[in-house]
Length: 212
Image (cartoon, rainbow, N blue to C red):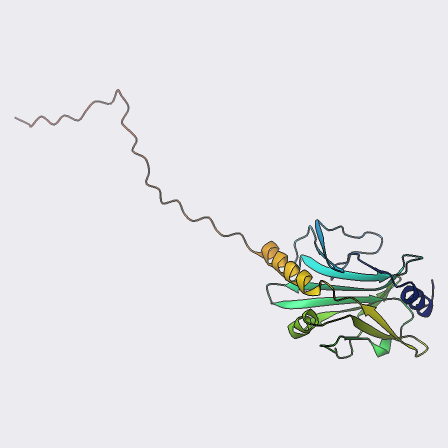
């Protein structure tokens, strides 16, 4: 596996920003879950998954090496309508200084230090709730944003990512998430009056003759 320095340097030199897909809680690398819906908004992709989930949809962007296709970084943001909260996942290569965490910045927002939650053979991941105000700030940012990571040797890397389409993607993703988590309304009771059923033809008419 290439070192983090080689992966990032190569990707930044080639300058390819490509879109991919990953949920806030992704399936194992050898069995990725395929979305049932997927639509691009600028440099972001909104997609929904065929599973019952509090956050059935996400918006995603990935930076990859043009030569190898290897992921350098990906960002996924999902919305949980039931609690009006967001979840963010940022994936970076192995070889980072775990204890240093990472930061995300734009011209309208600077995150606190975000801690890595886990690592696997595909990379290391920040997975956590994201403040709604941070999402709003990124939606109004101009230009690009960046994720700052620190390699094991102490070298700092700024990985730029695009905010083109961020606001539209977020609006579409949140709307889809709400629709897919709505409980179907109960069918109202039927108050239609029952139809009159005539007496059978052979039923004798009542005898209304007065008694003697």
